[in-house]
Each structure stands twice: as C-alpha cells, then as structure tokens.
Image (cartoon, rainbow over all chains, first blue to last red; front, side):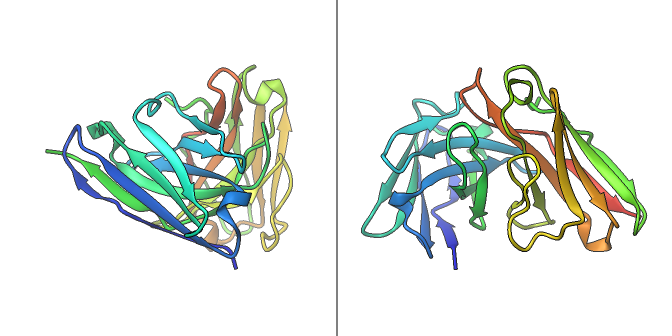
Length: 120
Length: 111
C-alpha cells in the first residue's frame, strides 16, 4: 500500500529555515517523480516543487532560490529544505507522488500534510 | 488569483446532476494540456478523482466524470450523494509558468 507521512513542520520566525520530511512506503521515492504542494489556511492548492527520478528539480517562482527539494534513497524519504522563510509561506505542505510524466503531471497519492507557520 | 478559474461554490440536491467548470487559457488547457481533478474532504488531504481529462483511478465511482473542450474543462456528478460534499480542484500544466497549476477550488454543497 502506498503511504507517505510528512514531518518537520512548526513555527519559525521570518527569515528562518526549516526542513520538511516525507517518509514513503509501498514504492521507491528515487524511482518516482515526487512533488510538494502547499495550501495556505483557508486557501487553494499551490504547486511548490517537483523532482524527477533522475534528479532534475523544478520550482514555482514564489520559492525559487529559497527552497530545495531532495531525496534520500536509503531512507526512502523526500525532503524540502526551506530558507529565508516569509509569512506568505505559511501553509500546510503536502508531499505527493506524481502519477504522470511531462507535461501531464498529476498527483496520484498524497501525504496527510504538515503545517508550517512563519510568524514573529 | 489562480491561473485556472473555478466557481467558488455550487450546490445540488441528492440525486441531481451537477457540474463544476474550470476555465484556463492558451498557455494551459487551451494548449492541449490534460486536466485533472481532486476532491478534498474537510480536514483531509486532496485525493485524485479524475486524471487525463476523463480517467478515473481505481475505486472512484463512475458517477464522477470529466470532460475538456477548448480552454475549459468540467467535472460532472451524476446522482449527487451527501458524501460528495467537499472542495474540488482542477489542475493542469502551464507552459508560461513551466509547472503544474491549480484552480481556486469549488465548494460543493449537497442540499
């Protein structure tokens, strides 16, 4: 059974850093396309980042240069390293497996999400 | 402001047919990119409902269906049920933004 569990969210001050983790089971993270999608409180979904099985990574303009997506094969885990955090980054962050291939990306499995709050 | 436009809310009585629209532009739906739909029940993660315009993942009832034409797409419910009350999001790819894009979401209320 495919399952993903996120962790690492919490309260951080503006300008701070945080690392989110997404532990997967039932499939291999490094053999899959993976993504992060976020949802601000009471708002809609926003794509954040995507990584190919080969390691190429892509980012939304809103996070480019501040966030980095990565994986650990030995732990079957996806990460999102977030630097220079801003209040507008406050959201629930979901990891999602990508079911399609370029440009038909869709998200076939989702984790339960982890809340990141950026506030002083 | 979302790249894809959805009505904020729709409603219908049990057993009725209801549709949710998703309008894009020439850089996303109009360019031929596929549309996908997600259901998000209150307090839970989104769930894939329709992929590649009109395909249902295993386990999704056939009373959910998708279609696409021109720069728009639609999600249809035939035989609305109380448990369908949720938020629904469309998603496609945008060549100008070089990434996936979502609609703003539509809240479905079952009367």
